[in-house]
Amino acid sequence: MSEHPKKVVLLDLDGTLTKSDPGIIGCVVKAFQEMGYPIPDADELQRFIGPAISESMQRNGVPDDELDKAVTVYRKYYADEAVFDDPNNPGQKVPGRLNNTIYKGIPEQLARLRADGYRLIIASCKPQYQCIPICEHFHLDTMVDGIYGASKDNSRLDKDQVIRWAFEHIGYDESAGDKALMVGDRWTDADGAKACGLDCLGCGWGYAESGELQEHGVYRIIDTVDELAQAVEEYFNSYSR
Image 1 (cartoon, one colour):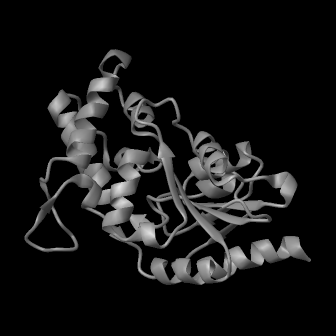
Image 2 (cartoon, helix red, strand yellow; image 1 turned 90 degrees about the vertical axis):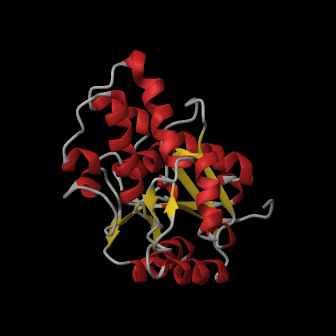
């Protein structure tokens, strides 16, 4: 990926490419049950999707000295314990990460963007070691040019850190004419983009609360998956005139 200028589209995973709430919420509930803490209400459970799990657990009363253990329990159900019904293969059991589906139309939108010369990079606050097998399972790895996420030790946790990590690995160079756009559904995407000097295209089909994306300064919100490729192309075309 050394040639310039690059047109880079940074894609969030949960709530942007995949409908992942059943698996994430199911694992959160399992973790709180196993740790003996009260299970958050439905609205608060929904807010676990997007930010780092450790941050959401802190917000919901898990003390600092129990946080690592709670995250470990969550990750056990998310990555290893096949206790959830597989939405894609009835009768099968899967771990939380596969209690998940790709939004209808995403493969076609990604194929259109790639055919038009865009570099598609997944940038998620989910740990990278979890992102990769999820993408491989749903064949998203064949639809994009790179998959980047948080580190297992939490030293790379926030979206701006993940974006910079991705840029380092793809040789992104703004001074050579490279241009990038973040695409995501939560405030974490908008804030992370802003911290890196990027704009964010908001995905209205994801998990944002009412008014959240506007409050965090996305430049535009699209409501349906089938608007994605055109919205990205319009954004980059506005800079090439």
